[in-house]
Image (cartoon, rainbow, N blue to C red; front, side):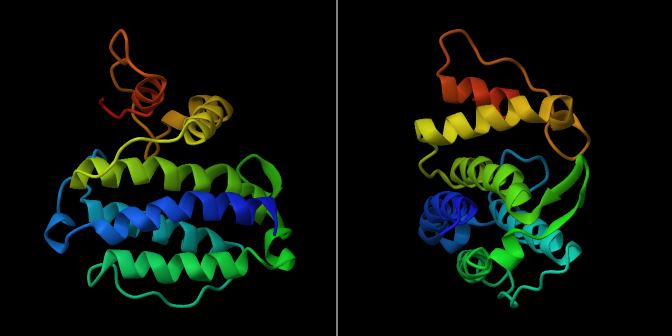
Length: 182
């Protein structure tokens, strides 16, 4: 398997596990993403990944409606993504991105794996789930933030939040840089 397949699966697995534990009455709970419920976060994850792939000419199979069952919609989406990421013709496809020529694999690995980790925390926070990230996940978030630079604070990405309090954990400091209160 490709690195992007492995990285995607590593981020998707704990996200899917969390989503399958969310009681149906908790999906409307507000997330740390202003104006979004826990279900809206799942809708965002599925929608942005699908939109990106469709934009580079890759079709994905249909998924159930997030409003009916966010966890099931994610499960079907994840399965389709992992199938696609097994195909080198998809992962090695190049296109002109925001920062120049890149590949589908590089974009998925850089942005969308990051997004799944960050938004897993958001959903967990919204529904009272486990918000602890692994050291490897915190490493990934921190490295991505460094690579994004000021682009991380473009409209619709992150907002600058207050700095983490003294004595905050590394995870709390990284999340604070992403505008997530700790």
